[in-house]
Length: 289
Image 1 (tube, rainbow, N blue to C red):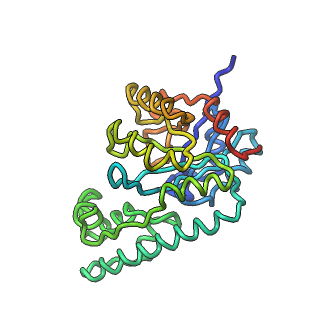
Image 2 (tube, rainbow, N blue to C red):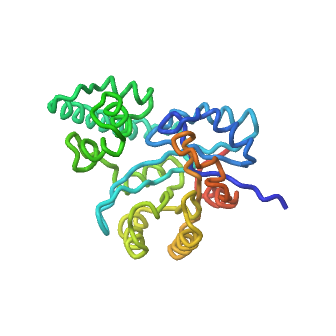
Image 3 (cartoon, one colour):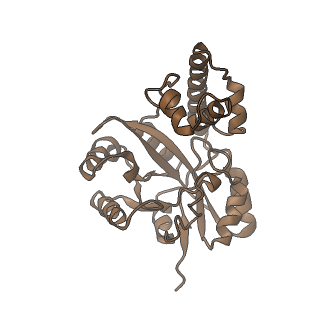
């Protein structure tokens, strides 16, 4: 029996990846994947081209998104929630994404103002050009600061200007976990906790977060296979998902040249996410293809 594999977490040029959405479908087909989810940060912009390309080559293309949310328990930390298999045409998306975009624009203006007050020759146009039409991140600020000679390295830019204690840092506004999960559910999707090992929480803290901040809102699943997991981490995350009756998900978190060591569907080479992961999650969604 053929072992079908999928990738349920990747990014395109619509957010912070370097491969166009339509080209991701071709790359997935070449990699032998049976299905691929495009889960760009806070945007659906690449989905139409992605799904059209998938239809042409017979690849199952899954609409996805990745939200950043803030949890307070057991401690304040940013987490990521992936939505899979929803209806991209649902009216609520426009409202939710416009709110995120407006918040991001306000933050960028505030950071630019702080930079200019310090006498730095930095404009919104500078960082927008650096981002190349994609979502502006602090990494783009760091690149501009380095090119203008204010810092020598990206690390220095974050230490001096862009980190939480940096001179121009402005905290971002986050969605609540309840809002992220409810938006995904309202549009017919399944809500997945992404890469839970990356939040700096131990196992007991992860359990507390699940019990207090995520399970009450109907979280559907958790990434049990991920590019950076060690074998013990994969076993631990799988056991945690089973304990809380969460469906397993998994993905490479492919970003193209921005994460050059991670291959689509294969991670660092040994990642193999079974199609059954998506099959079980799909049963909870309105997805049809």
